[in-house]
Length: 219
Image (cartoon, rainbow, N blue to C red):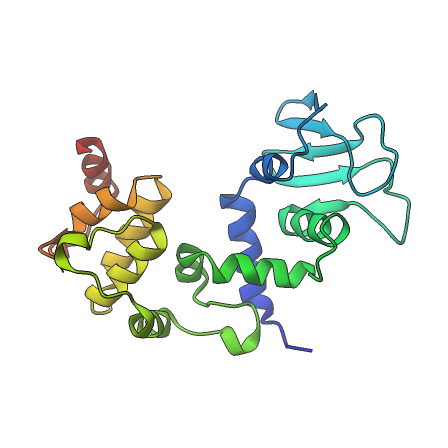
């Protein structure tokens, strides 16, 4: 069994709980049919984790990314409750019958989220995946896609992250600036236009929060 880095695991879970949204997964898993309001930021849906649930019994706290089923909570073999990663893992394991665990779900989210990788400082929660931000940049440099200049504007955050890492030469401020803009929801192409000219990084100064807000307002 692979060893888990507890510090990376804790940081990754905190990031997921703060930046991901359980409601999006309820939509993806088609669990909002027949849902009823359970209070502020709370919805009660049909529980797919136990059979014959004719009335909504799975309470979901959308703000805190927590869930709890009051119909099957007392079943020691099938407890239903926890945070967002445990919700995803349980759905995939029980409904999709996939061979996943709480830890492999967190690891998969981390491996597919370059912004989380920079925040956490690793590409995996497992010990062999614990690396520095500099090593992440070097690793992605080897895998980066070669764009022709006219086609170089990235269409996704993953492409943008790779482009920044291959161009910023370890400039931490550029990396942190790009993270700030990505977290604001700005489109990858707009972020690219702010930071690049003729395929090269042009804005390398230290941005204040006021600078970043001004940049976003210009768009």
